[in-house]
Amino acid sequence: MNQWYRRTLYYLVTLFVVIIAYAGAYDYGMTAFEGRSQNFLHSLQIVVETFTTTGFGSDAPWSSWQMNVLVIVMDLTGVFLIFLALPVLVFPLFEEALSTTVPTSVTGYEDHVVICSYTARADALIDELDSWDVEHVLIEPDRDTATDLYENDYDVIHEDPTSVSGLENADLGSARAVVADLSDEVDTSIVLTAQEVSEDVRIVSVVEEPSHRRYHELAGADVVLSPRPLLGASLASKVTTSFRTDVSDAVDISSDLQIAEIPIRSNSPLEGTTLLDSDLREETGVNVIGAWMQGTFESPPDPTATLRRGSVLLVAGRPDQLAALRDLTLSEIRRYDGGHVLLAGHGEVGKRVAERLDDEEIPYTVVDIVDKEGVDVVGDVTDPATLEAAEVHGIRTVLLAIPDDTAAEFATLVVRDLSPETEIIARTEEAESVQKMYRAGADYVLSLETVTGRMIASAILEDEEVMSVDTQVDVVRTTAPELVGQSVGSADVRARTGCTIVAVERDGETHTDLDVNFRIREGDELVIAGTDEGTNRFMDAFR
Image (tube, rainbow, N blue to C red; front, side):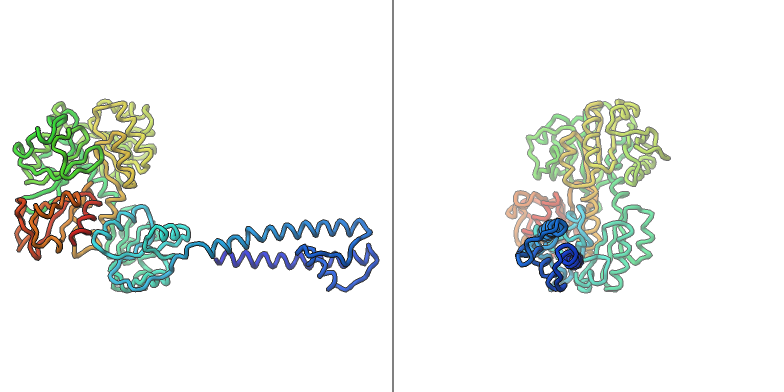
């Protein structure tokens, strides 16, 4: 609205100057060319009548060509200024009056989370907070974005998150935490401002460059998160090695129970079989909780569905049982070789992948579009010639760590065409790109958006536990008051939510052998596993 006021002021000043100028010219012309002397006020009246199209009959006609030309020009100028006023002044005024008014402050919030401001990664965080019934407020400085969010039922205010008034209007003093996830420089400004508004609020800041962590800590952030290195480490852990005797990326539930995602590899003994025929329970002792089939999570999985390369089993068991299953999923052809990895992208994620591969002594080739230290082949990974130069045909695993989702999708298609047996592990920026990557032919995909959202939620929800932040599934420990007194069988949790109760912690003891008659008691803590949407449904239904 301030811009409209400025435009109105400029328009009125211009209109005044033009009218006075024409009045002076008209007054002079009537004396010089028509021989009719008159006072200036009458000349001003004629100009106003002309501009407003209400007439100038008292002076017409004019005998001199000079005055006729002046009147013609005045007519055109008046019409122009009238039509100029419509788009510049009138239309914006009506648009402002009819448009949605985004609030600039909130009231009645308590123990909420202030999010500064909206990014694609904020949606993953909001989903996590919603699943725990934690209120939140978005501070969005861009008016159009704030309007779109408000019309889509987001809890948002239109304010500047780096200003004291902006954070005060979000009721930061009553909040449990504030989250800064815009850019490394802007985030430090938010951190400094948040301390000025409230000394007690928990400040969570997200850094793009891990080297900037120290500056966020110096600014006063309580928790500084760096999701890209974690994403790289998680992707690297999915790379198959013949000498790994454990499943290093498993989630520990207790001393003798873990949950892990284990992909089915090409040419493994399990490829082409079904869960029913594979006898995994008898062979390894693991409990299959769910399965990703072509990017879609099924819990419980269809026992007659064919396990194909790229299927990912979500299983629970002892470490030795998970290791036995992992061994079954390895390729018969390449079970005993050390493998070779083609690492596409050498940014923050790619560098962390390279560090992990170095630690496990896995040979790899780095491809990047920029010639820099650590890069073996310079070129675009979406170009078949670049992949040929990197000898993709002899590669066991291609790990796509490039930050462009569209390029990653295209690169997946190219790799799959050039080397059908190669395993493809990839990262995406946005969660919505994961399904497209699977359709393109990727074997395992993890999004930065999901990892970031879970990391922030884990830092905020101190009284709850988000146990897995770098997997495709969500593993959380929580209470379920609505399940108290019900048996696992009668609750029918899987059918209602798509989640599985993996374990129940009661009086310091972890119960993992949960038959249909196991009854939930007051004070029990449940460990559940499922997709983000599934755990959200569980929280809505049973908390």
